[in-house]
Image (cartoon, rainbow, N blue to C red; front, side):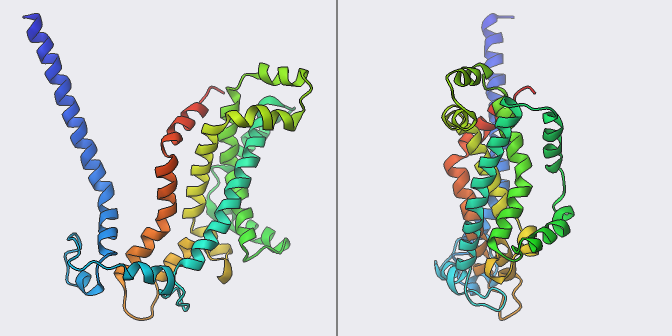
Length: 294
């Protein structure tokens, strides 16, 4: 067979495989983006237009009233306050929980890799085991602990719950990442007189950018989207966004305002979408950097 013909056949085969790959990717993207499209389009429609059918059609009359209602006036249980106060409840819970779990996880990873002690493998195994404990198992013990410390029904109590539950994951991320960090640099810093915390702040932490991004995205997403802990441990003044959204959708007073429900769902998902859009490209990079031997 002519070498040129063989070359053309290979080129055509590669071109065909690329076309198939792009078609499959477009179909998957369409499948995953369709619910978001439906929510977004119907959140901009008057309620009468939704009742008339055609949820996939663009609005004939565009309106932002459902968004305004979902944010500030929608009925949340018996309180017509909208999602605004619960949004800030979630922010005040997520920010300290993510910060503390990331900081403590990095310290744990540092100790378990560079300041090893007798039984460090057992300690790491126990922390790793905590990653596989279902949420439901810790509800009663955690409720008891929160009661003892006087944190039941408070935002601080929710921060503690998410800190404790997320510590196994953050420790795993940082431990794997720091395992690849050259121990010789740590020893050189010790020879120069640097102590435990100075090495951590001046040597390890500045090089931990990728894994910090991974941990922040992971923890932020898990904590923000959590419903069970919020429904179990929050009081009326500390209810997070996910629980408030559930109360909005299941409110039994008045007419079901589906456009307001769609707007509320997008508002609840918006922070995680923003986090992924801003820093999502670093997620896989940091995760692969932590996927080391040992």
